[in-house]
Image (cartoon, rainbow, N blue to C red; front, side):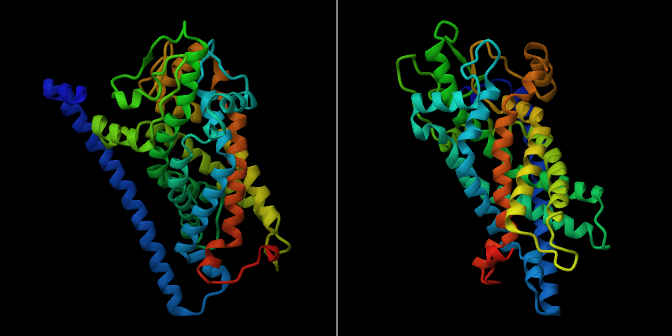
Amino acid sequence: MTAACAILRFPNNSAVQRESQQSTFFKCLSGTLSLLSLCGLWICADQHLHSQQQPRTMAQQQQISLPAKLINGGFAGMVGVTCVFPIDLAKTRLQNQRSGQQLYKNMMDCLIKTVKSEGYFGMYRGAAVNLTLVTPEKAIKLAANDFFRHQLSKDGRLTVLKEMMAGCCAGMCQVIVTTPMEMLKIQLQDAGRLAAQQRVMPSVVTALKMGGTSAVLSRSYNASPASQVIRVSATQITRELLRTKGVTGLYRGLGATLMRDIPFSVVYFPLFAHLHQLGQHSSENPTVPFYWSFMSGCLAGSVAAVTVSPCDVVKTRLQSLKKGANEETYNGVVDCVRKIMRKEGPKAFLKGASCRALVIAPLFGIAQVVYFVGVGEFLLGYTPYNIYSA
């Protein structure tokens, strides 16, 4: 209601500005969708041409089967998220706490306090959002990287620069799903920290600031020190963001997400490809054991995660709608970086870096095992692939 009144009251400023922002956003969104559609059409066309020419070998099936890639990415994402989500929750809470208002000393302290105050399932707040959207996110990321690598290596050579370009394109494609997923997940994950902050430091935290967001988003945080925090679902948050801010509300922090995911993919995919190649039995027999795929994914993932950790801190701060008292708000990436540097120092940009490495390493290790073993191919009946023969 407040947002609607503001628009009616200032038609020449806020309404026009909002309309302009939404127009720009939809142009970017339509461009990304067009790119994804073009990728799908090219892969389908390539698959059709191969099917007309000759019977496909297992390697060819794994290379050109888009449905199998989608199944592999989705299955790997769901298994990985289930395993490492509590660590991801600890990472979000550690990144959002400010100097002088620290509730958690480290990852283990955060998890122990979360279980004590919110129960075992409190560690999985926001997991439903991830489990729902991780399938398209991981599928787009892995399939897009595979597609661009295939397109860039048609001349028979794939240089490191081309591998980085393929990773860059894959990172750009995935943000269409990653941004709203992270946006909703962060609100649910950080709710417990703000409620605990009220209970532990009632004299300091007397009010919460949200910058014009509705009461539905506020009620999960506005609990007295003695009361239990009221749960709010991702569906309710989505409805309120769409009602008050439009689709752009779900894509808050899009620039910071691109700033994190593109460099991550640029580092991860080439590094994984070279590590994975080291595990080949020989030039005549290029197969790689499944455990080598897992270790390559873990190592490449942890290196890439730590590399882009400062960008992840900025993204988390920008996407956190609720702020505790004395917690500053940010007006974009540059303003966020400047304020963190001035008030918390350069060490703040590495908050949660170890947690993020522990999240990403097994997540991508599992993803690469599923991808290279060929679970999707097996489910679609292309080949009865055996994990022990990898």
